[in-house]
Length: 239
Image (cartoon, rainbow, N blue to C red):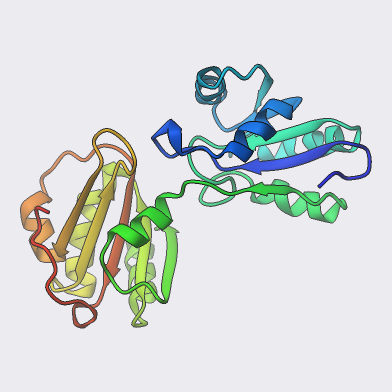
């Protein structure tokens, strides 16, 4: 939606791995944009080059978004068409974009939202758990005490819980799940969704910890957790 000056602001979901997952609408908006504000301009350039799109880029990430949000909105008000890309997935979902969205609305600019591939929705489908009602917890806090407290809080209901996790903390998370929620807790680990080395591991927390606790994890990880009584006939920990 234009703001009246002819300019617009579009938050565009980018592929989470497989470049074929970008939408036709996203490609059209990127071709029409005057500027792409990217979490990582190098990764954005690879995407743009792959689809033969020529557009100026500027960095917009967690370390500069507080200072740069106003500049981008001023450009929209001056008539420029600005597209926002994060490294993978949708801006503002565990990525930069919230401040821009909030301030745009306050400034009378209605951003255009271009949906697309999502590691969360991929995991929701792939986990094999009940998903009529679920909780998304994003990334847990860094500090151990807060992590464990948040884990217990999220799991207090009967709903399936989904988290993002760093490969450097995946084994730690499995240990925390066993110690805080019980080894019988059912877990699904989705690694590198849509990519060449895509992998889904399902089983109890105790089984997965025993089988993969010493593993050197790599790639993007989304984790689903649910109560054992909510599932039946789950696959073993190597599936």
